[in-house]
Amino acid sequence: MTEADARIRLYEASDDKRVKFSIGKASMEGLAVANRSAFFHPFTLSAWVALSCIMIQYLNWWPRPEYGFLGYLQPFPAFGCWGAVILYLMDWFNRPHFEDASLDLLRRPDVADIANYYRRSPSSGFFILEYAGKFVGLIAIDASKDSQSQSTLMDKGKPSSSLKSKHTMPQGTSTVATIRHFYIEEPYRQAGIQKDLLAHAIQHAFKADNAVKEIKVTTTSLILYAQKCIHDAGFALEKPIGKFGVYGWKLDLLVLRRAQWEKQGVVS
Image 1 (cartoon, rainbow, N blue to C red):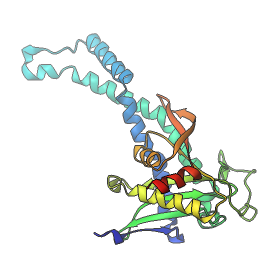
Image 2 (image 1 turned 120 degrees about the horizontal axis):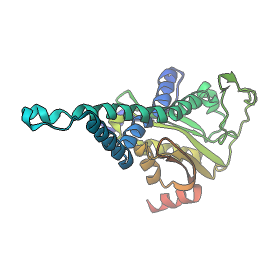
Image 3 (image 1 turned 120 degrees about the vertical axis):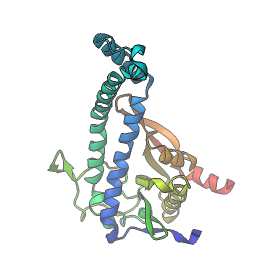
């Protein structure tokens, strides 16, 4: 394969199903990481061992050397039982946040009408990354007047009364652009191809309209490849905006200002 096989293009109507699936998949991706991180947390491991030992003591399942090799396997069912219970509890506590976040993203007006929503400002754009003709990832940057809005089309299963129709949504460019979606298929992350996609979106936002003064994005350490890529692009922490999950993983709001971006361009 050559570098010419990779290309970044604008969203097309034929991408709709794949894009919406990828947005939902990206939102749910952190659940497996959260469950795994929670299970291997020192406190969780300590509770697992303690509960298993209590069960072994109560049922007298300590190893019995007189039965040979099989006698040493007797405690294992206790560890297996409590391991399954703890994994279930981790998922039970963590899942609601990710499911709610995924539904929230899919109900937003930019997902409902991608082409028209990202056409309202020259600095907005919904970009698809392809490699050898295959879908690799996507990034959506919103520089419209609604760039910081969190409104959705549905509110607890009912149409939102506060949402403007697509005919009344304002045209023009905001001083703040927001990266609403950023996703790369897992097999391509090691190559660092996400850096090119992010750099393309940043350059598009800043160069298309000088009104854009900064770009913001929300990150979490659970999606490490995206967070690292965003940090490497020069984004700096503006403020923590919340915690979620069993052990309170942080959501951070990061910002890249035009002056910093231009400075990086000079240096590079």
